[in-house]
Image (cartoon, rainbow over all chains, first blue to last red; front, side, top):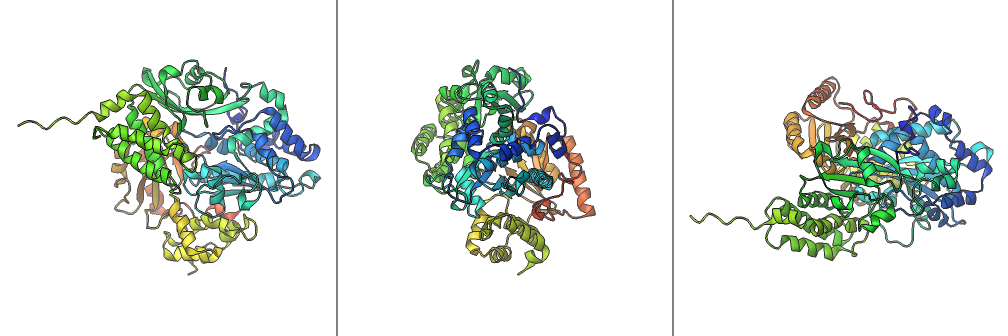
Length: 422
Length: 200
């Protein structure tokens, strides 16, 4: 299957970030149709029927998430999760810069569907240029009457605000994001209550990923059956795959879900320098590693990747060739999670600290004879005990690399050579 | 102290207006960026003024400032260089390129150059792994770095600084369109940098 650009339409339509170009290609027509011709419940039913699932990693059904919002509590909020920070993920970066209006329109349609009148687009602090682009797009769309009060005489209005983060991976977790948006430390909250019931300012809130919402205008335009005709039965639609690491052409590739790994790798030009594939992390630093022999023919949808024991997540494929030592990979991913652990719960805070020191020692060839077993012991103590997914993700790579690439650890952790006898 | 309020009165109003009445604490991140620009760093006076403007407890504001990686409690160079050596960038040579960058900037990671112009930090993923090695300088992206492009880029940054000390120091934010509420449709991107931000 070739690439199919539903969200990355900017690849075919130059200047799509400009309002006039976006409108010339059907932009904001679906928001107008929704508020003038459809009941909110019809919009939710349509998105439910399409089978759209969250593109941020969890794959939760979007229409179902919207339907959890209680009808009789006001105000309500839509929050766009544009805190893209997973290592190896750079799709929202491109969407926001090159197709910002499709995100804004999708978020506004979501707002109408659940009865919210305010959208907050939360951007990671490093997305300074993206925030400039979004603010300009919002101002332009509002001046032209596409968003704002009393849309098309319907009596419904929606305002869109762009809100900055300041450098914290944890804020991609939806309850931590809401804490950050309220001016607190960006630490996760206990669920339940879920954000749909008590989210931003304890009001009903839907948090959706940027890519998820950018699919919504297309679903309204072409219908649920069209969307389901792309991808697989349980994973319909397209997915932007971020391919990084040891390939000839790293980049974003939007493919129908269920496309095979082999096709995606070919799009990215194959493994670089004519080398052999060794392993792939399919969901950034958070996924259990897949060995090369697990990849041929693998269908890229949530179910098929889960069947391998790994996860599709946000579809961020970090590709590694035969020269890479997996103990070093574990050191790199743990350094990330240690840095980003928010400190709220002890299994994650303490576990990542120990893992950082152990994996650094192993990768440097300075490990003691029991260090690898100690890594396994620490990840056992973390698994299932952390407050939020960050701590659970942190142990994916060390655990899976020890299981599948034991030789790489043996190579680095062999007992140091005895001192010379003389 | 009113250093922040004298320098950015309109920007403060716009940032607070973004959130519902009574929810002004939501503007704390925006105000900390502004305070960083007004004071040079988030010292006690800066924190206290932000807390006073937002009617927050200074301890809470300090906690927020300490939690996020883009806030600085100590002075930094005019250009904060954030270089990514996280896994995907490291696979494409980011660790090998780091010594080159350190040599050309004249400082090691975690340090500021002797002329005070550059502070270099190694950071986690910046969502541009497809164009490694890459970095942000005062939050502007620079991709596909090599020794030759780096020479040109640093010459440009030094020339810019000689003409006019970095306006977005110490971290980007002044006078930023982000703080001005709805930004105008034009000028969305920094001069000389396309939307995908290859400036170097």
